[in-house]
Length: 510
Ligand SMILES: Cc1cc2nc3c(=O)[nH]c(=O)nc-3n(C[C@H](O)[C@H](O)[C@H](O)COP(=O)(O)O)c2cc1C
Image 1 (tube, rainbow, N blue to C red):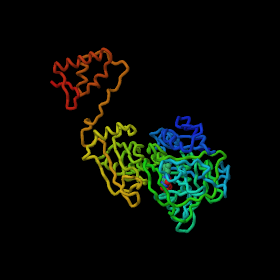
Image 2: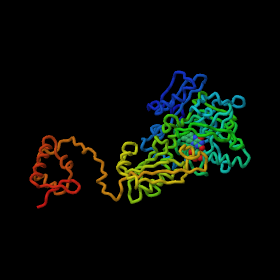
Image 3: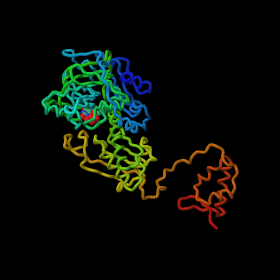
Image 4: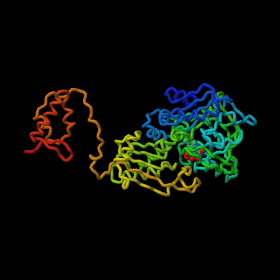
């Protein structure tokens, strides 16, 4: 049985990842409530003036993504790699919960949904957790992707198809053919389906098969009422739409973007809603962008997908990559990778790939560390950047690269625009003595009883080979340890032991 949004919210709650607001709130409080508790998803059960509850932020951190995939947080990329390799064809069914209520003609009214303003300067309320599903006008295969839609009238929105994604290409083709593009917009899917809808596939791949692979079971599809498009039956709400062949002709934005800043006013195509179908008691889903914590929004859905792109690129180049993390602080624009350098040049090669290999043009900054550094521990990463790197040798700056024009540090927000990027090699240089970089960690704790007898002969025998003091000391516990220290002092006084270049103790010869 496919996961539903309602079931998924219950699971988030069981895992302490949901704030449920039961008392009625004003629509004007919604954005603030969601963004204040950014580490949790939000379910607002009653909004003044509306009959439909609102859920939001259901994929805003790695814990939620890991839970959706049923693995630990550090296993997300591996699991995604496994699931993206399989294709499971969908099955067609006659009916589904997403069609319990069908509204056509004058009953089509988008304003029944709790469409709140997400940011102070947004042009209008947006439908944001909107998975647009369309068929390639030439090949007939399905594409799925999230595209935000700005409310224009009660039955029309703008749709943001500015980036070079497939929906844009499909629309461009329909435009050339002078035909509308039929699009089903599904609102209210669980996190696993949102994740599946974002996987980018080659043009001849049907993304329902990809979603099946991500779910691990076939997607049940039902036919729309007014357009020739099939939709997942587990959805809460379906907007049956068409994009008329009028091109990029209506104003869109400003809107608070993933960067945490506003994108400008631009022109976009229109989405006309022909019918709305939904469950008897639907939950409206909203996706979060920007706000107080731009890295703790539903942008997180893209993190593991980009991490997988980068992971594959590094492996393809023969780099022994141990882990990759997009850092939430930069809203995806910082990547940290840990590697085991095998050959000179591995770390700089890894940096160049991290900065260039993702289709999505993320990240802008990259750091490569050795595998002993925990990439999820920021202090360890900054420590490695500080003490394992020399700025004059270990910073790589590349210019003229593919950019995300929304980055306000760029001179223009309109293509064509390119960006510069920076990589930081914080691995131990392969040509330097490793010992200088060894972290000074506490000696390994010993709890069990060790030897009680200390003899000079034993110690001298052990010191036939150079050894650090801790290595000798851990053989003795209790009073024997104290005696060991005294015996070592005696041996030193009598000039029977010395130190080697690395500071290890060794028996003097002769
Ligand atoms: C929350 C969220 C909102 C998004 N909104 C948009 C959008 O409005 N326009 C857009 O072009 N891409 C948007 N994206 C990115 C696309 O949905 C994503 O890149 C998708 O994979 C594109 O499909 P394709 O690669 O199969 O063409 C959004 C992604 C997320 C996570």
